[in-house]
Length: 227
Image 1 (cartoon, rainbow, N blue to C red):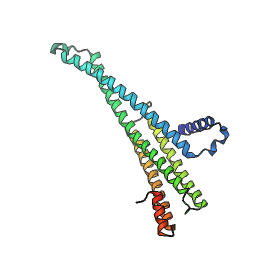
Image 2: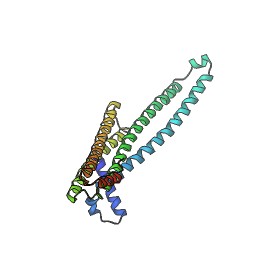
Image 3: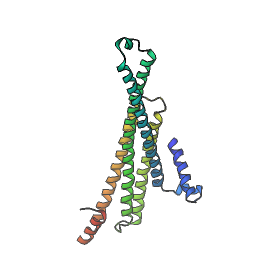
Image 4: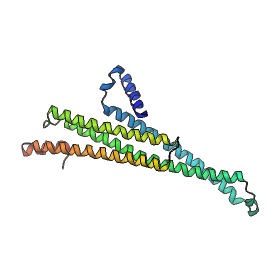
C-alpha cells in the first residue's frame, strides 16, 4: 500500500534528521509515525482546498464574463451565438460544479483527519498521566501501551482510505464509491476514538477504585481534572 511506503520514507527521514541509523527504524514509536503522516495529509488537504478555491474564483469570473457578453447581445445576435461560445459557457459551468463538489469532499476529509488529530491528542494526554499514576503497576502500563498501540495501528488504515480518496480525484472513480470510502473512514475513526476514550475512562475509574482514603480520591480527581 502507498501509505506503508510513505510511512517507511517518513520513518527514515525522522531518524536521519535526528542522527540515528535507519536500521533502528523499528524502534520508532508508532505514535510519531501516525502524527507525521497525519500532518502530511492535513497539509495536502489545505493545499488542495486553496488551489480549488483559486480555481473557483477564476471560473466564476470567466463564467461572469460570458454571461455579461450574452446579456449585451440583441435577440438576433443571440440566435447567431456560436456553438463554440455556447460550449465554452457550458464547460465553465460544468467545471465550476465539479470543483465545488471536490471542495465539499476535501472539507469532509478534513473533518475526518481532525478527528484523527484529536485521537492522537487524547492518547498523549491520557498516557502521560497514566505513566505518572502510582496506582498502576509496570505490567498494567505495558498492557495499556499494547492497547494504545493497537488503536493507533488501526488508525493507519484510516489514512490509507484518505489517501485513496485523494488519489481518486485524478483517476476514474464514481461519486458513490468515493462517498462509500469517505463514510467508511469516518465510521472507523469514530470507532477508534470511542475505543480510546472508553479505555481511558476505565483506567481512570480503576485508579479511583484503588484510592484508599478520601484524600487520595480527591488527589486522583484533581490529577485527571475530574470535577
